[in-house]
Image (tube, rainbow, N blue to C red):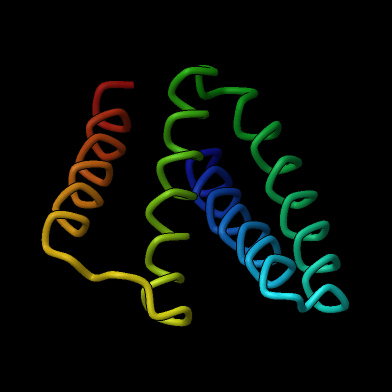
Length: 104
């Protein structure tokens, strides 16, 4: 169950980073609440997941999900690059996260 919680925490990290992007684009009224709520939920769920998942694994999975998720949001909503190399390296992060799950 804590792996599901960790995945949800990673998704809320993406929400928090999206709030940061809104703030950077000048949308402060909508950006700050999204940032605060996203990271508050994300950190809370991460701490719950770490009750049974080792720190290094939980943090690596959480940040990996945030990295890939934020890149995907950037590509879809902010017209960021979809270069093949970028997609390949994102795939490598996903493979690493899956690998950590399999060996822990």
